[in-house]
Amino acid sequence: MTLVLGIETSCDETAAAVVDAEGRVLSDVVHSQVAIHARYGGVVPEVAARDHARAIVPVVREALAKAGVELAGVDAVAVTARPGLAGALLVGVQHAKGLAWAAGKPLVAVDHLIGHLLAVFLRREGDAPVDPPAFPFVALLASGGHTAIYRVDGDGDGQVHELGATRDDAAGEAFDKAGKLLGLGYPGGPRIDRLAATGDAARSTFKFATAMAGGGSLEFSFSGMKSALARHVEKEGRPEGQALADLCAAFQEAVVAALVSKTVAAARQEGVRTVVLGGGVAANRGLRAGMARRCEAAGLRLVVPPFASCTDNAAMIAYAGALRLGRGAIDDLALAPSTRTSLPRVTRKGGGRRG
Ligand code: KG4
Ligand code: ZN
Image (cartoon, rainbow, N blue to C red):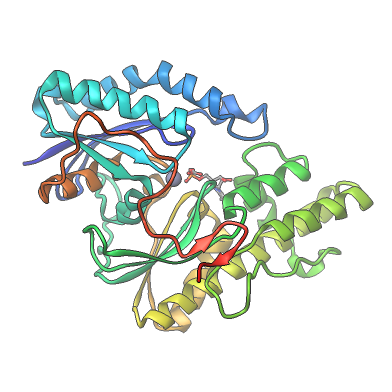
């Protein structure tokens, strides 16, 4: 049995996990920095890097202990090398290099986005069994840092293609910025989700234009909604009580409408029968319900991984690393992190489609 230790420090979670090549999760430790960044209303890169440096040793130790293996017992060390915050990535990459060198194990670099896209294949004890999706599938990855739709033909290099991404803010970032404007604290996503459940979008006095970037394209744009909300709050003040809940429902409905319609359009365009969700925003009840409804109507199978597989974790990095290892893709100690994904981009921030 091949065992891989995975390490993830690309943003604000210090995570380590031990996973086998079949995606069986032996341990999955996540130390979240969310409380540290809450007082700043968002992730502060320098603060993130420092906390990773503090947490990485105990987090890795805990992951090995929970899996019941020593470093000498794993077959490789996989680490998120891109994309993410430079200083944050550096902590994980340098730590992984040190472990790999000291234990004489192969080092395997993983693209964080590939990790998210393959997280649907992870198996945790206690999870309800999920029938893994067959390739090809269309995946919507929506988190605080990324929002894009991909066509996934397999787990190998060159088998993942971006179909469209956001031109500006990520969907989770839009939720978080809206939450901040509405005085809900950080992160705003789960709080807006909760309030929206008691609100009614139709009753909201403020209406949002749906976050569409060009009718026919598969690209998103969320920054206009945030600006509209900022202007509204400046003019009318922050709503309270039922009016706040109704406004949250209207905001969420507009974000969800864009995510759902573009994902279903992507599946139709690609002639693909399966849709997979990933990223922290996949926890949103409005998105889950809306996507389930539209997929059913369109005859598409929807696969939503458990929440622990959607948010940032190292199990997905270990699993993607195990698959790379199986193909002989080993990195050397000169590995340097990059803030950019290895996946070819078709959407440019602030731009739109490249010619
Ligand atoms: O994947 P994740 O844990 O971290 C990265 O950003 O990579 O995603 C966190 C994001 C935050 O923006 C958070 O507000 C959003 O996911 N989020 C939600 C919900 N739960 C988390 N957004 C909307 N509704 C939720 N229930
Ligand atoms: Zn992520």
